[in-house]
Amino acid sequence: MTFGYTAIFRKYPETVRIEDFKAYDKDDNEITLDETALGEIQATIDAELAAIKYQDDRKNEYPDWTTQLDYIYHNGLDKWKTDIVDPVKAKYPKPS
Image 1 (spheres, rainbow, N blue to C red):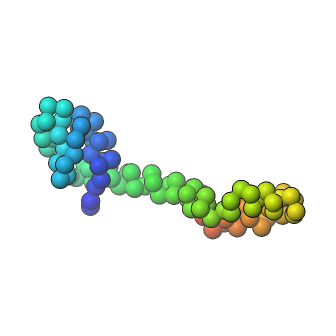
Image 2 (image 1 turned 135 degrees about the horizontal axis):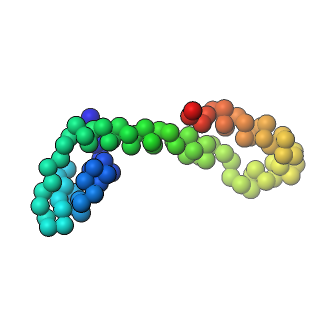
Image 3 (image 1 turned 30 degrees about the horizontal axis):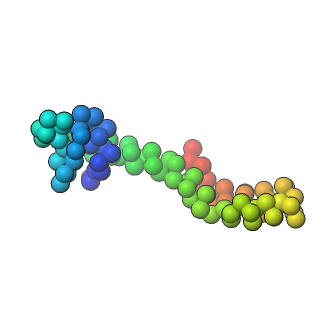
């Protein structure tokens, strides 16, 4: 498994610099990385991101606010919810 900088900073908060996937502390000492632990932390980070990905997906799917407000003005809130909101929520459901 590959891991990113976020995993290194979570596991080793004393890290001040990462270069070529090597971490260094404030005194420029190299920190020995435990790749197994970093892999587990990265898996947790990936799960956290997956759990909130639906929010970005929904945000990108909805029309802009002017279009939505115009739709509400001409068709009402119930129709807006049925025609615009509900299909997006069904397409990108909130993880349980």
